Image 1 (cartoon, rainbow, N blue to C red):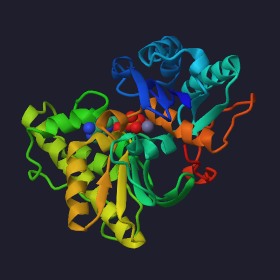
Image 2: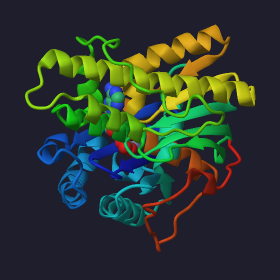
Image 3: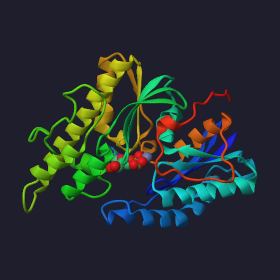
Image 4: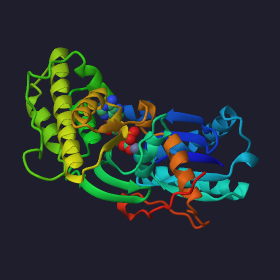
Length: 342
Ligand code: KG4
Ligand code: ZN
């Protein structure tokens, strides 16, 4: 079974083709980073218009790379939410229309389920059950994953998502958008012990997060007037240390609380190298195991949507012609899926 996957929930246009016999055949990405960098963040209307321009040529390119013709596609998956409504509508409209034209089933995929299943695309995928740390620009979630579609929420953020904190802190430091990679880069030459940032909500029980305090701490730490590059690096390093430390503490707590043996990390912030190495150390010390997608599948991409869509289509999920998008959509509202062997 070959499935075309389309991702347009935010500022990346992603397309991929997943084959149940041969794995991922092709994945292509068109990033809008330069367009939004001018404004220091994603401008929803511009994102939607750019998807309109980029998506159809990207679908054609992906089919060419995969050496797959329209009559070989068995289904189409597109991100139906959560995300920016205009952006989502572009992918959903084209995805649903292509499925109709090709007379194959379509399915709307939950963006965070895509992230959550992305480690399955790697050579050593985790088996169920596991704990998922989902960290992106819009979400910070700890989820107990029993099986596909059987999710219970262990914790979430009470204010900013961790990716958002990276983005806002970068802006305060005069670093470029998106903030995650620029903070990580600046931190390479910084001293993380010049300032001690707080580890929010780690001194009380529970698995919820709060990241807006880190951004405020940065605002109060940044000196008035001209700021030298060493100070920028030192603040970036101290911020990154605090954000990563906080995530690691909560992951450890979630593993203890549930007794699960495996942890997966996905979403854009999952590309952060310090987070990856600290979680590896922590899980090793605890006798547990951590799994990640490769970095390019941590940030938004079409491959995770093609893969999650394949599993959903195999499980009988279908979207009728009356499709819609869901800008707000909780993971726990998803239907459990009886997994069907290939
Ligand atoms: O999953 P994603 O690509 O899009 C959303 O669904 O939000 O995540 C984007 C977020 C941004 O906030 C970006 O700054 C952050 O992921 N990010 C990182 C890194 N790469 C991307 N944060 C920390 N370190 C990174 N290396
Ligand atoms: Zn995402």
